[in-house]
Length: 128
Image (cartoon, rainbow, N blue to C red; front, side):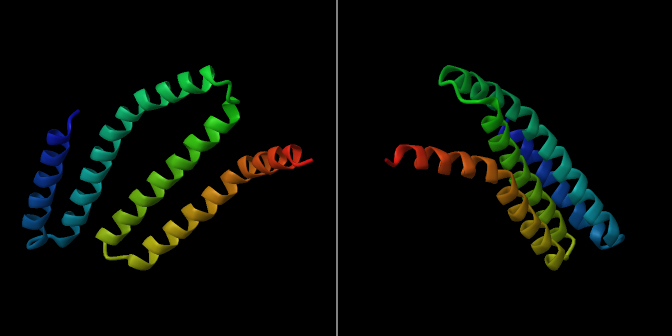
């Protein structure tokens, strides 16, 4: 899947949503959500190769799998929260979008605690 196909899907969905908003406004938001999900799934499939490369690099430099897993989960939370917030903004629900972003930030902080604790332990052990 290349960027031209993704852009084509987005532009076609936008034009279709605009045309349908005049007759059935609720269909416009449905088209936007479906197009967003399709684009999200297409891009998600491309991330598989990135994850494989990161796993290979982690194996070479002997990073524990737990830390790489946490980092990947943090990235996933950020992407999913951003996607959900954008869908809510498209639907005219900016307040809900803000709450989704806030929840994503809190969950990222919670997920990062084991890495922060490990980093602090490392710093404490280095200081005489």
